[in-house]
Length: 132
Image (tube, rainbow, N blue to C red):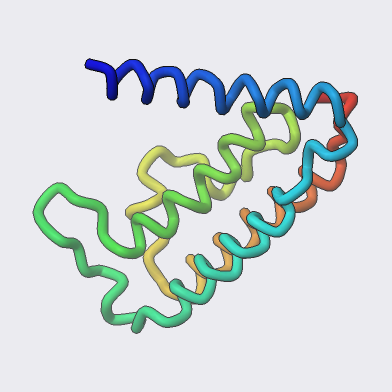
């Protein structure tokens, strides 16, 4: 019981501390974000490149996304989240609901991943702490 209360307190204080810090130093709100975005982008693209093309159709079990579907899900999600915030228009080429199943070639998937991370980087560069 004491452990649960401690965990609850810690998880309640951490976001509160971040909000107070962001409010007291709005210019530093992006501190660390750009580096993390670059890190995640590089690792995701490197992983997509390292997986052999013939393994893109592999799935761990029935009803589970294949490798290509997971990678396309990341790309589509990046575009979707940006479009929901009004930062961009969702790409028409990705509009079918089952697009994750239709785009399966390694080069095309890597292209969409790269475009999606570039869109995140571009949208982030346009934001200001005051606008948040």
